[in-house]
Length: 184
Image (cartoon, rainbow, N blue to C red; front, side):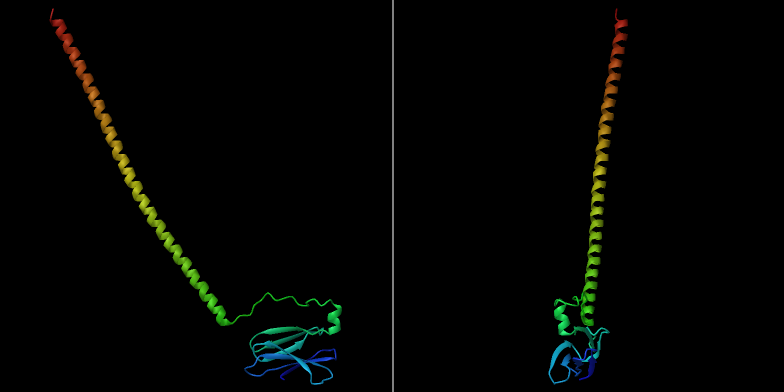
């Protein structure tokens, strides 16, 4: 036995064990001492501290491994009259080793790096597509401009032919008039 804790109620005593290499245990003795006890293994390492709360309802135990255990040590009569419900709710916290935390942090960092790498890859692919589409737009624009120039040239030459044909018609008509006046 390494630690002792007594409740104000005189019918029980608690002790803790602290043997190196063995889990920490809490022993509950009835008082007066008869040698009979109940043992509860609750810690991964030797027990270092043990105290009853001010109202003698709970026994708090701490070990070298950093774990804390809380026991409901109310008198059995009190437990029966209260309805037998759980006095303490389950804890939301989880105790993990430092190596587990480091592994999780490393895995999270690797995932962040992978996300960053994928984002860079996506940005590169988008830039390549933008360049490709830009080149296609430039080619289509150049082709359109060439077609437009060709149409302008066709239209211009058709206009020139019409103007030439009209001029030719005027010259022929003028020549015919001049011939018609000089012939009688």
